Length: 166
Length: 179
Image (cartoon, rainbow over all chains, first blue to last red; front, side, top):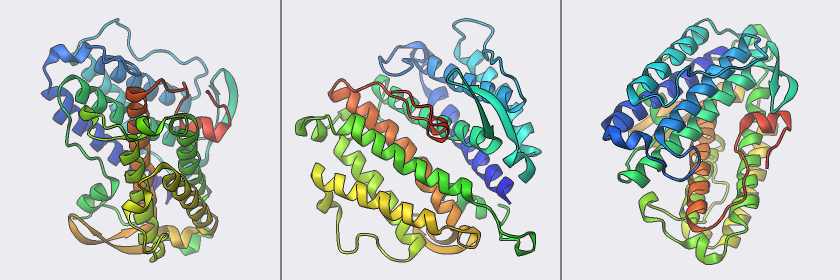
């Protein structure tokens, strides 16, 4: 049953990520994608790269890797390249979550976090990614508000659940 | 959407993870309060940042509102009956409410079990009336407050020089804090 919770929350996270891309990032002039806003990771490009790195890195941790690599093999990717890499990492997550069960939820993983070896259950890494994506979607909306215009873009888990139930 | 129900034949359903997530939410609220909000002057606390359409004060009220309403939906009673948003207009009042809401949610987390986790509540939203399960209301608070804390830190950065610290679930769960 815990795996159903994870799958539902994962669907919500992917739904919000898609909305962010389709309704916000892709609607902007591409020249704004690399502009440094002076806050946090600076540009939408760097925010997106950071989110992709985190999703990629935590997937590696879930598969037992101790050496966590970078998601991007190129420097300074453009918007289409970032989107392509985001979609590829998201697809890996979709495959993983499709097979997720309650045994996986509680499986213990040895991993390195902040230069320290820790043993944590899988659910902590999975919810870390969900929390991290939520945080950075909010930061990206703030960047867009600073560079372009304030947005009416509410993300709401209740609304998502109601829509899914319809 | 797949409907979740408690399978009583499989024994007690361990929802310790949900308790930890609730405690994390209110721990991180407190961290943001102590490290980012408390050091502000009153003027910085109230200052409107136009492009973000809000102030630190208004974002604090939004977090309080959502966390109060969700707990009310779950428990069926208002944690702060008879009080309005105006009652939390100044920083001292918000701080007091912030603390008592943390206590109320922590008490709820202590009582939380599998049966309550999957129990249903009638919810009135802008989309009408519907039924939701308690776990869905809990996650609504988690993700709403996470977004709002991010917004608060951005607002703080616009009006002052904030301390550097991370927001992270895993740092709370592992105790490996930064900042």
